[in-house]
Length: 51
Image 1 (cartoon, rainbow, N blue to C red):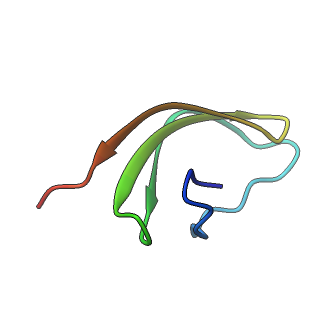
Image 2 (image 1 turned 180 degrees about the vertical axis):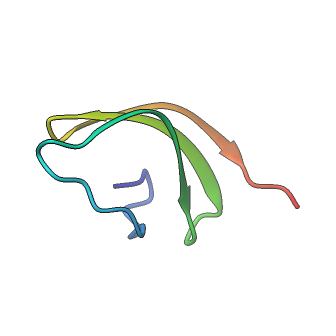
């Protein structure tokens, strides 16, 4: 579900609706802001995770 095709720990079903959801990818260490509706994923923004 992420740009690098790494697996995330979020499950999305047909009736799942997410708006401005911060999706973190542990493989590429990026946080992607996504919208999800009816299994359609729209990536709005990507930013590097800083600690």
